[in-house]
Picture 1 (cartoon, rainbow, N blue to C red):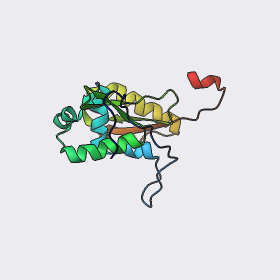
Picture 2 (picture 1 turned 90 degrees about the vertical axis):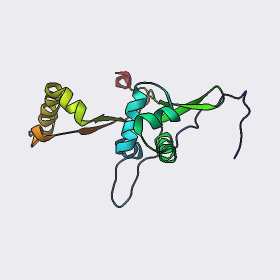
Picture 3 (picture 1 turned 45 degrees about the horizontal axis):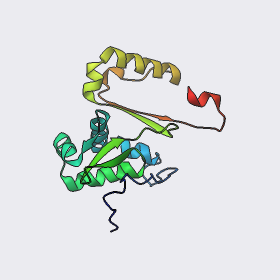
Picture 4 (picture 1 turned 180 degrees about the horizontal axis):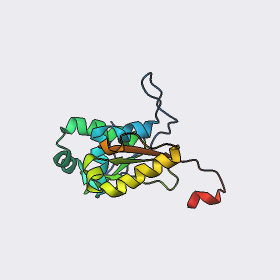
Length: 161
């Protein structure tokens, strides 16, 4: 283990680039797979409210610290979460928001779906229109995970819209 001097700024290492996660069960991209894990989704939702320490994340999620570190590491490896040191002793975790993301994952819980029922119904109807047929059993949907994938080209004028 390499220890850093206290006067050196400590930040999380850069995320490893990964084209995808190909296991016999799944062909979804690594960031999507990490973000859609139920426990990791709760971490991301909590960090959306602001930076949090592991102690704060433990309280919010109710997960043991060992498991919390495992899930934070998984999110960090795909570039969704980073950290900085506060007072040279406390890690504060935060969401990373790149200028040119590869993927955006929108996770809507049952509370999100029920709390904004009319707006959610409009989204489902619009997706049905894009798909070419209505989403079946739309009234029975209790939660949603929507993945948006991006392609960025050099000098692409649409990249900034």
